[in-house]
Image (cartoon, rainbow, N blue to C red; front, side, top):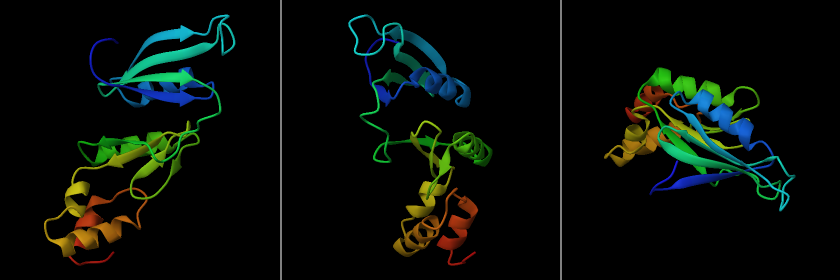
Length: 162
């Protein structure tokens, strides 16, 4: 995993290797790259995992076992633009199981605390309708949802409430 481009570094508190394995199991095209370990120079325990490189959906990541100083927050999230409803359901369900949590507006937090936005096709179109009244109705409906329901967003945009 070298070359030009961006790599996102995710700071973990000792579970970077488990997180990388989890993400490559959730995202079917994922792969683990190089793993580096702390040496006697520290600051981590010699022999423990310092970083693990992995790739999911063509995006490169580095999981760093940096300690408890910097936990994840919703200030950073990853958007998953899904091809269809079954794909959106898959990611939503996978990322919320085993300790993951639902939030609002299609946002979820996985079991490691990383935030994701699961976006089914048509959701952005509904809340970005060129007609501001339609967009406002769809956005108001979205604010009441956890998992995004595109059919309901369209109904709301059309002026029907569920």
